[in-house]
Image (tube, rainbow, N blue to C red; front, side):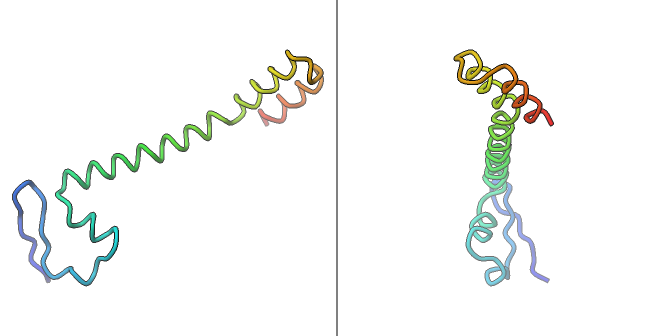
Length: 89
């Protein structure tokens, strides 16, 4: 088993792992702990933001767009109601 050695700054150095990790994994493992935590936090925030933007464009956005079309006279009230029912189903 490879020894785990503490390093200044709170990160850990695990000897004997050079062949086990490659690419981004090796890059992350070589960073101090606080940098890894910040990177994970940033990636988590990006994933949340992406999800939220998708949800924000969901039913509410469809209804808002349909309302604009209704107000401009491009669609009838019946068509608006149909779009609204479909968006909410």
